[in-house]
Image (cartoon, rainbow, N blue to C red):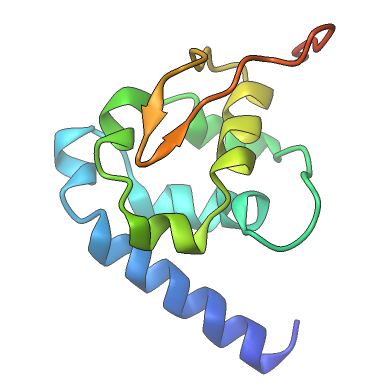
Length: 117
């Protein structure tokens, strides 16, 4: 990874951490763990990639409705909400269609889509 990519990801993690500073306490989750284990799977650039076991271990502990209250336009500029839902569902979370997370509304699962562990 080039130096500029590393600096951008570091800045993005810092902005997300600062923006979501209240999330860790209120939603009982570790934002630094979430960022370190899952950020590569929700970045805007690139294709959807199935998350790692380590990412899923963090994701499975999330209170998604609580975290969604803290998703701001700034966060949405740094992560792909579509990929965040993909990661959550890939890790076995039930993310209800129509749920609002920031300004993003979760779409229904595509017909015939199966979740696997």
